[in-house]
Length: 122
Picture 1 (cartoon, rainbow, N blue to C red):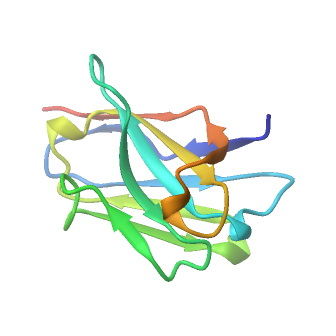
Picture 2 (picture 1 turned 90 degrees about the vertical axis):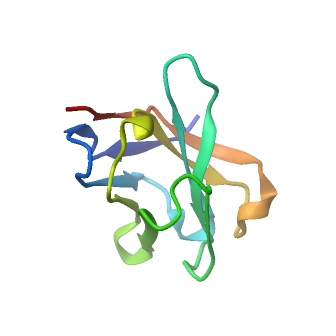
């Protein structure tokens, strides 16, 4: 029932950068691993990245390694996804989700955002 809120999406040219933010009001994200997902038209949702509750461990899909960086500032109750060297294939709706617990391997999700659109096009 509780939702996260994503922001920072938009239209950017190939090679450009965006920083997405994931936040919540009324509860604390610091107890949860947070994952970023995306879904492109005609494709299934895929995991992009995940960060443990403390920020000490991160995971990335092979398609974004070296280009995307996930981070969090628990004092601000916010998780970020820095997206550099963007490609048209990165286009899609990006969602964040709070996992069941501290670690990214749980693969159970308690809260979801409604998504933010990222479009990479010239």
